[in-house]
Image 1 (cartoon, rainbow over the protein chains, first blue to last red):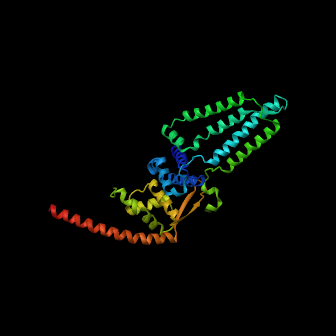
Image 2: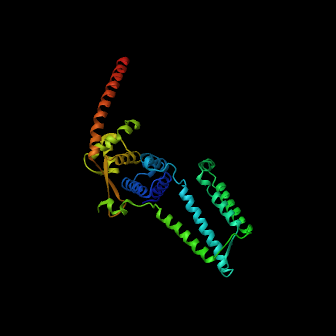
Image 3: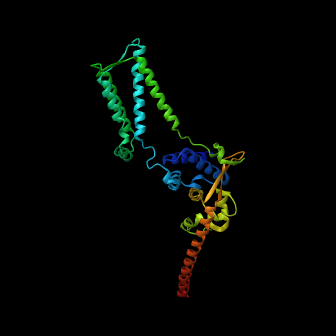
Length: 210
Length: 117
């Protein structure tokens, strides 16, 4: 397939994903467009129009099956991310204690609790519809990205500087192992929720003829 | 020469697609060529495939994929019993509407002709 057609099909796939279509349906639509262009020799934009407009028209057909707000994070997504951050924190606290301090216990102070609270609260912004509207209106990715870095910096400062009094002492190995288990569970969840674009003929049930 | 207003086609295209499919199953580009051969002008993919997708969702057409030895897979459409019912009901309604519209336009055309001669 020539490059303009390939580029068009790729762009169409992106636009279909942005309106919330699932991978198998995107694969089917792309394959049908490929076949049409291959057979007719037509220019893709002449035949199908702008990829975003064509995706919007197809989305209208499947409106009741598409999410109202594609990619809007749910409370479950937020919770999973928060748990993953806790897992990373445990590993980051446990490794230096195990390697540099010869297995000395990890001392958890008020800064760890406050830092974790700042981190989890700060990163919950995307859950608020008002925040999403604000980002959509300004469309400047630097602002939320900068805010996220600021939250992380405050959190790290609290954990590093506010260490007294010691509230609990945990074995570094327990911290590392439990942290790795949490991170692994997050990645299993992510893997199970993946939705790759698939060609329709990847499913043997779809093909009736060779 | 394009003799029709593109807007005319929008309402009736699903019925025309179902009509072509009464001849047997076919794929999208073949369908658009058959419509063109019938004198309906060029039907672009961006117009035809959303109509096919809607008919598929409604259960008026069924599909199957064919994997060729080379090139992309091909999606074939065929009429279902529900599609035949939809075509029968839609064709009757459309013909009644078209007949009334034709009568009205003919009257207007004759009056215009009389006024100018």
